[in-house]
Length: 525
Image (cartoon, rainbow, N blue to C red; front, side, top):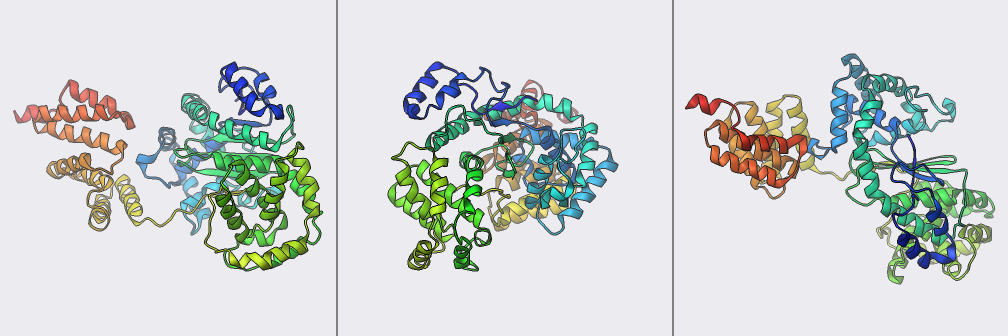
């Protein structure tokens, strides 16, 4: 599968002209405008690419079969729903082994905590159908070694689910997401290159892959680095992840020069002793000088690239400093001078880091550190490598998830209890709970209760369209069965007007408009 360059050419010469005016001093756009023309399927040029990866699709198919689930079903992207349907077609014996492996290695951790290590596994394997490790086991990351046995199951999943042909069918949805994300990501990276003064035609032996995987949970972001290879794996993005991608890109561009010069800082370990065990400091910063230095450089750059106001910039610098990034003020000061020069940032930072005075930084710490509130936070991107964020407690969401799981397991009693508890203790008009109770009542043959709950669900102000559209359809079908054809047609039309096509709802609604649902009304007549 061809990789797509993030710096694929713009669609018009005007794009190149406008940006050349803005960034002419950096001679970057001459490279961008000379790249081979093409859409999302164009060949790669340069070191940053955006694409899909069959290894990730295979892992997500296997995980969905194994029991991984952190979303309500109505939140699934259509690709994830398709993958879950593929998982249902796997041999039951294989599914049993997948579930056993997943549960055994999950231990007492949450589902949310599982995704990063399986993403790491996918990126540490060769292309399907072999799925062999790219390095000896002892050289693999610890989280990969923990689930390495899963790779044997991936071979079977890939072949049984016929994922090569499935990926072709799903490809248009991935391309649509890539086309949507591409311009904003490209713009961010172009501006970052301009700030760093990266020379035109600069080619690195390192690569950065931005991989879109729509079968992963929405808004999930996993960042990984392996020597000269950097990866950002994105689920469907309903919010912008440009800051996360830029953060990874800054590491991609600068980690080598920071690593080269971190050892030249005389007695840098003495700085770490200042923050050992201090409340509000991230332990990773007090344990690893290179990590602390690298993040200090990246965070300072982000503040300047974002052109924060002086007040916000000060708060951000203070925030990072108080979290343990003790060299953020030093680097921020360098940047103020750097912006009046013409030298590339790599050259400037390479010369500046060996000049760090630990004594001066100790004096800065003694004079300022404890005066900064530990709770002060900046609006910042994640670090590298980055695990999935831990979701805040949400009892209502947990109950809705419990109800949906019970419903899918045909446990109507447990599902009813969960949905009723949502209405009683959290939200009397919860559209999701009302919709769930409508489904339960339908299964139990109680059309009166089902009708009432579906009708209330359509009037709810906090129901998602994927549920609301089917509440209209189910309500219309009940009305058809009760010989209330005129009201039934009105509800079918409301479903069409809503426009949501989850599980082919629009076809169901159009069919309902054409002819009544079922034969019960005819029998009653």
